[in-house]
Image (cartoon, rainbow, N blue to C red; front, side):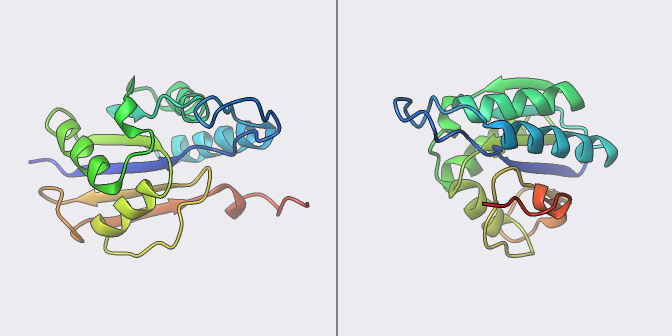
Length: 164
């Protein structure tokens, strides 16, 4: 059996200025667009190759997923179950996808992504910040605390702090 790699990607920074939009409809802001492009280039340099990118259909997640898909290829699908999903629901979605693929990226939201990471990985994580991506590898099958964190990348690791 091949190793399974799970990439958990939190959507990039969204636009809060348009108050009439629902949470689901919020797009990326300019910083989010910049950060998603940066993270896509970092993933490409790491030779990240998801077979499948599953994304929340919320606009900010879709925009982030499209940027990653453009840079990394693989199939791209949107799954309404990812929006507002708990870590347990995300776990079941990942299990289902891993029956068909070996390298899976989930683009979604907190707190589900951070919580999923913390039940699967050998390395605790306080918060998967906007635009962050963490990779977890599993030797045989996905089990609690059996995954090894390959990397944890986030925009502020590479960019100067934004000034408020």
